[in-house]
Figure 1 (cartoon, rainbow, N blue to C red):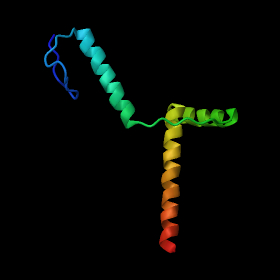
Figure 2 (cartoon, rainbow, N blue to C red):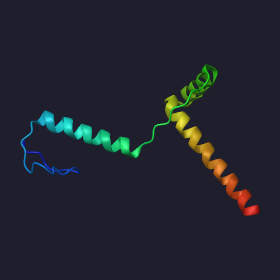
Figure 3 (cartoon, rainbow, N blue to C red):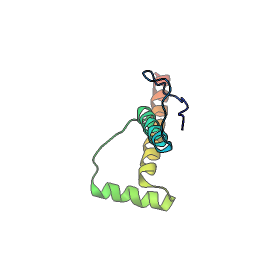
Figure 4 (cartoon, rainbow, N blue to C red):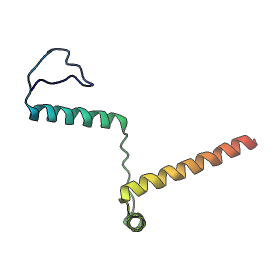
Amino acid sequence: MKRKKTQVEYAIVEDIELSEEEVTAIDARINQAEKELSEARVHFRWGMSQVILIKKVAAKMGIPYQTYMKQAIYRQAMQDLEQFKKLEHQL
């Protein structure tokens, strides 16, 4: 199977023959690398009671707890930013 050029140009070898499995593996690695470049990973430690609370709320909302945490943190950050903007405007 002849590999079509996608987002990555093969600088060293112009035309190469790859099996379908090789094409799939290469595409998966390219997609994973692009995803990692567009994301930032954040790690932090919480107490068990905090994690349990987050998991309970997320379960009630029917979403994974990691998704709930991202949404809650983002929502709070946006609210805090608006508060800062209001305070700066008052000065």
